[in-house]
Image (tube, rainbow, N blue to C red):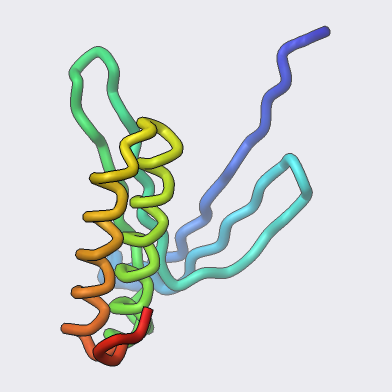
Length: 113
């Protein structure tokens, strides 16, 4: 059995000021493709013990949408952290912070999950 691989590609169209105008992604595994307004990619550099990141968003990304995006990323990170480490306590604390963050941004009302 051979090694399986897949490709995930981002195409970023820039305006005259080098600001992202359009972001498109595609994944070879499922022949999926799509447009998006934001993408945050983090990469762990084992040799340097450092996280590299690429943060992109289009000039048309609305602040309200960016707040929802960040809130959902925080919730996703708490789930991923729990799966990766088994640390349910810290995962729960991260989720609680995400709920507080959502309430502070006005995305969630008090008492809403």
